[in-house]
Structures are given as C-alpha cells and as structure tokens.
Length: 462
Image (cartoon, rainbow, N blue to C red; front, side, top):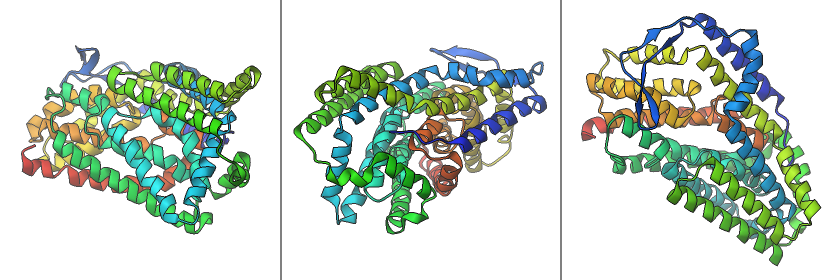
C-alpha cells in the first residue's frame, strides 16, 4: 500500500515538541524518589522535591528527533518489518481477491456489509481487554482500510475498526496485564480482582464505541462526500485500484495464501497469550508469515525481495512520525517536568468528596497520559501516589485502578504523543487534525461513560 503523505501531522507534532520544550523553561523541574517493585521503578509518595532547572534549548530540540527514534527503535523496527511482510502478502494478490470476494458476498445488502463493523470491533476489543492489544493492531490497518473503502465506507471507518475497537477494550480492560496487572500490583491488590465489574465496564465501553462508528459509517455509506477524508480517499481508491477489484477472482492459490496468513496470526495470538510474546517475537512471526505467504503465492526471489522493500519503504513516514511523537516525551523527561505535573495534579484531591475525587483522578490520569502514553509506565508512575491518596480521601484502591485505567485508555485514541496513535493514522493516510475532529465527540462520550462507571463502586463497596 502506498503511504499517504501527512505534512500537517508532522507540523502539529513538531509544534507540540516546541511547546513542551518551552514548558521546561517555565515549569519548575522536580522529581519524586523511586524504589524498586519487582522489575519496575515506582514513585514514593510524599518525596517530591524540586531540583535544578534543566531547560531544553535549541540544541536539545534538534537532537530530540534522533533521541525519539532511538527511544522508539523497537516499535519503529516492528512497523518496517510488518510493512515488508504485508508487502509480500499484498504482492500475491490474495488480499485484493479476498476483499473482492467479500464485497461480492455482501453486494446489495447494507446489513451484511455493516455487520463487519461490530464483529471486527468486538474481536479487537476482546483482545484489547484480555492482553492489552495496542501496537499489534498496526498491521491490520493495512487490511481494514481497503476493506472499508470497498464496502462503501471511508478510511476513518477502516482505521476505527481495529484502532477504536482495540482502544475501547484497552480502556475497559478486564485482564490487561500491562495496565491492570501493573496497577493492581503497585496498589497491592490481588491479581485479577474486581473482574466481574470490569467485564460490565468492558461491554458498555465497547458498545459505546461500536454504536458511534456504526452511526458514522451509515452516514458515510449514504453520502460519501460527508467524509472528512473524502478527497484523500479518492486518491487512495485510485492507488489501490479498487475500481478494478470487482474483476478479481479468488483462486485456490489465493485461498492457500490467506490460510497461511491466518495460521500465522493464530500462532501470534497463542504466543502472546501463553508465552508472553511482545514486539520482538511478534515481529518474527510477521516476518516468517510474510515469507511463507510469498512462498505459497509462488513469488520469485527477486519479486519477493522487491515486495518486501516496497512494503517497508511505504511505511517510512510512519516510522518518522512515531520517532517525532516519542521525542516529545524525551524533551519532557530531560526537562524533569513530568513529576511536577503529577505532584500538582495529585494536590488537587486533598479536600474533595470521595465520589468527586474518583472523577478527578480519572481526569488527572487523562492529562498525564499526554506525557506518559505507556500504560505500564503510567501505572508505575502514578499508582504509588493515587492508591494511598485514595485511602485518605475515601476512594477504594480498586476504584483508583479503574480511574487510572480509563484515564490511560481513552485518550490513547487521540493524543499525538502516542506512537501507536500516530503510527495508525500514518498507515491509514489520515491527517491527525482530521482524525482529532472526528474522534473528539467519541472522546466526550467516553469521558461521560467513564465518570458514570466510576460511581457504582461507591455503592457496591467494590
């Protein structure tokens, strides 16, 4: 898939980088003491102290992108390898033929075509809630965008199915080891505790996401020109040759390639669930699967190498935007302003009613997620403060974990400091400012839903 250029996105992220650098000249530098909890460093409550200011000047700004590249090297390498693997899969023609067959099967039935949205979103949400699926959804954007366009929707729907689906599951997770697991360990709660109410939250949050996307998709299906990316999608349709797709036939070789790909994904899911695989192992599975697809699809050696390089090259802009997004965090960390924000926000809760405190915790975690978009990283940073603070103001530790979970999860779908968010949008060819305007109403629905879901625990003694 040829990657759409997103100069506006680069400009926006670059502007945020400059703004954060300016904050290091204004916001006092400060740190909390930290101690080891297992393999993680956690904050020691009550130890915040100011340190010598470390304002980040022009030199730091110029070095920030390369430092961001180094900090995000693992996910950038993952994106490039996955791009190459999908280049091999794409070159076999199996994906285009499979999409064409699906479109023919649903032709004339909007109901069947629309069913793809809730089915796929619930699937991604389930894995988001179970294993914290996040970076893993990046390659699926390459499949769901052309599928969405072929079904009569737009690129936003194509990105939303895997990204919003997994994001809703991540925020309303019932088992996610990267958020709930770490947060409960820091809060000294039994692993997996509070499962039943978390399932209720997961179902409600996923339904909110599905209904929002389906409502939008129905509108776009009736009038495609209402799409914020309508003009971009016309170019994309031409590049993907979707107008010629109806002529493609699904052959036995195509079926064999698709089965090979599905088997690779089964191995991936089993490895993540049973063996705790992460980026390195997942990258290896995608590489092996891509090579196997090329072999089954009978690509020649030169053709296979060219397909892999073309697939990786198409994602260079994605790699660069991920590096630039990560460089914002590099500047904030070097300027030592993250702990200052954390200390300031936690001080707000001192004399508020318990129910209100839970809501404020949620909003504070949402703001902090801009600076620490890593779920496990934010849990290690904030829960050592939020958990004991909850004890003082009448918020149960389980509720404090839930507030963290919502605050960390929902905003991942919009913040430009999230490497996954920016990577997904670059893959889908959607400028960040267009996506932000589209997803903002959903963010508001999520915030309201999160606030409502934080109330029952006070009456349940949860």
